[in-house]
Length: 331
Image (cartoon, rainbow, N blue to C red):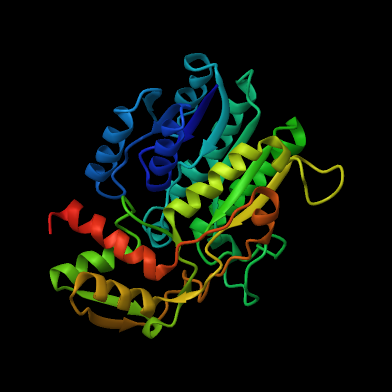
């Protein structure tokens, strides 16, 4: 049996692929290694995976229909797909909106069309985002909440990908599970995320921009807890997807994967200062229109269906991230 992991050189994809390989799975990784952020970080992640037995890498773009569908002939033994490849970032959408339509919408279609062509395919898991909840005032966010008022194009593209999966599940009986991630952080993370960019700036003595005086709240979720949730959903198999919202509905189900804690961004900054041993130079700015004031995950559904139980607090996670950060930067 073989698992396809798209976005394998990305933050979550790398961590997931490494855990799958360590437990003896065969993994086909697919990634375009684009330059949205430092390609050297992606190359370093990929180099670690390529040292593991059972790993095969295919370089390609999710929007390239021929490249994605060719995987059906190259690796016909693929029986599960974990689709994590995407154009990430909220504010980048204002600079390049077409990248989101290509990677997150067209890419979702190409991956699901690939799934239809794989004779052993039993289950598709794909990444969604807490961003789909927009500026909902009711917290914590539950999977049954309305998600029709996105605050940015990234959120709209992720909600669109969910609806595409719902349609494929309905039309083709394709078991699909969507996972809404909440502010994932940790070693080998994304430099465009606040915790990483703040750490770089604090370490270098540069100012950081704190929006709305740091009162914005995020459900910061440690990477190993996210991977445990992914593995739980993967191991639960199609039975998870086959529990639709309505009796007789499509085999498609959505889950929040978060830490079930809404932490002020100011607390994140304070913990980074403590771990780095340096005070941050703060500059304040109003909340961007694209940003939600708070994210907070209701994780009861994931707990009930596959035992999801995050354990890592921000107080524990930030020092672990900083230890890796120092090693990566040679500080």
